[in-house]
Image (cartoon, rainbow, N blue to C red; front, side, top):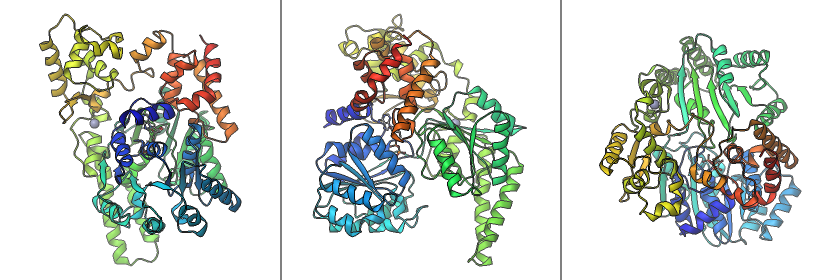
Length: 601
Ligand code: ADP
Ligand code: ZN
């Protein structure tokens, strides 16, 4: 089974590796076991039910509350060659009927459906006669009154399942769930003897920072000048502040969009679409912006003002880096924000109707308590990531290596060259090996045939410690372990993995990730990163997407773009080595991509 699901991952998605949790979830679903998965935003939940859908007979139903996300997912699936459709209130009656007809004719492998459609006659008429093998419940916390986004229609799911002639495997997914919500999900969905995964709250690719600039606006200007970004969000506390920051950017020739409650629906939708479709790169917004936005390539989220509490902060900051690329979450703090927030809290609660004065009082107290904990985040003399994770009840190491506190405290240059090289080897071989294999690579042991088979003898670090003994190697490993750059897996294999702190050495240094295996195939790419080529490929991506009425990232995302520019593949079969290009996309766009690249060789 392992080989089969890896081949699907490569063929359809163009990826070589599963992320944490994915492989086990997929295998369990395929074995017929129910699953409950708690995985953070951007960790790749969709693949967990899409691959079983592709791999099994029958139809997979995906229940999802968010219309915009359904549309996105269906676009993406069609792009990679998987037939899919969605059924929700955005379809006209005729479109809906047509989709049901197609579904009955067995045209779709995956159908996204809004929960309130499940028990309608039209849908039941199809579902009761169809072979539904998997039922995936996305945003499963919506089923619970204890969650933050309760949707009554979710509670009808088990009623629907009971009507089906054959019970499908049920897999529930959510990014946030306390133990109470988890219990609720399991009991409401009648999960049986289920497999459960929780990959935790941590988002390793996010860099957290708190800054206290004298002038927040000029901080933002300098920041935007100095980084390379795809898109970003600047959150403000009030409508007035949003307009102020937006006008300031405009006055400085920075093209941005604006989003707040004072705009009418049309304006808001247009501005949101402009952002999703890359017509504007920066969105200045109040907290009204972001629900249901699945844009994977947001490179930064800046908070111009202090959020009201950590939940809100983490949810908004978490909209950065869904694609797994390094992204910044920066909070611009000033003491006066605390007073402003106290005022907003009191006013909000005073103005709300239907609650007694007594209740108002106690609400104000609990909200101010949460605000206090938000303020402590800005003033803590410890790791920011640890602070957030502890807040959500998770333990964390003292030094994540990827927040403003840890970056300032530790000077990475103190790490010696040999240790650096060992880290690079661990990284470039995909964090798959234990100390013996790694020793053989850095010591250059040519008797180990696994090394040449995997092409690791082409790594620049191959044999870089050949003048040393294995004992020297092991001492370096111990040093890396003691200093929290690496860790060993708990299982019998004792595989060496890199901690976020170690990872921070690789990330953010350059846009070009050196991958020596690819260098072997493509020849060493010693040429400069060609931004003209990058622009032309981006233009191609945008035009193609526009023709299809889709956001650009659905054609190919930024990681794929970077690899194309770095390696300049000049033949169709070389495109298979580029991350994110599966068979279908290569068939559709490969020729045009190669044509563009050839011009730059
Ligand atoms: P979630 O639903 O958990 O927020 P998504 O399913 O939208 O996350 O996935 C986020 C991004 O990660 C997508 O761009 C997806 O293609 C990418 N992704 C998922 N799995 C992998 C993988 N194994 N390797 C590389 N990228 C992946
Ligand atoms: Zn840290």
